[in-house]
Image 1 (cartoon, one colour):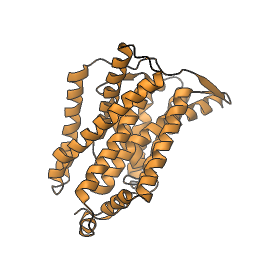
Image 2: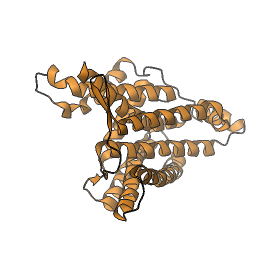
Image 3: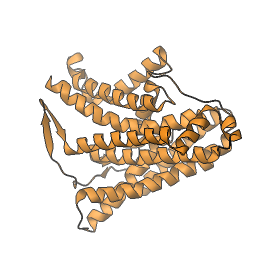
Image 4: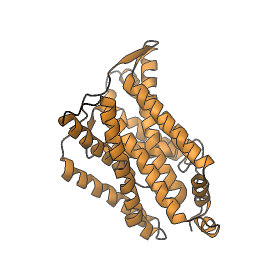
Length: 309
């Protein structure tokens, strides 16, 4: 029971990060029916930029609490990723908006590889360590342990997701996003500037990715130029699991995928008699992806896509 509770907590924390990244995939797909495979690399860029700023502040012996130093790194990473997301949409995707679907898909893969190589040139092939400057306290829940960092990640992720739901459901921008998702042509005829809405969708998704990237780096204590590839695939799996194009589905899919992965890592040794260890935890994400595509391609809550102009 203790192992189950511990893995459940770990899974919810990890899943909340997957959900933040999955939201970027699902918002873009909901409007453009485009799978932005470069989104994972935007997450990686957020982590790398934040770690660069944090490392510079720590190296300069700035007299600030660790949480404020990390917050400074995040505040630099967010606008950097927002600008990156805007640039990707404007340069790589907008010219191909009316092209056959294969063209923007291939472009997305190309942008992903380009960003990986840029990161490798700037930060090198080695892992970048997250400085040990955050509080390291922990608490007991039943027989499980939850750290202050895990609580912070979970609360912040849920708060951001709640804020996004309010943005989409209660604001003028949210109504424009929903109208654009229904039909680019009709929304445009109704006076919605669809180019602005699409650009803002990329910008918002990139801001979420920046925060998620820093969370992943803080959680594992490391960042790497290649980290966005696997993280992006898992977030895409989460979006498909919940129903790609569906914001609530991305949140649900992210949390479920995190729990499935953590429980799988916790019990895979017992299930296979020790033949496989927790290092095979990534298998579960792709097993889930295959099962969902075969058994329920529209995901748990159903796809939500509009009509292309």
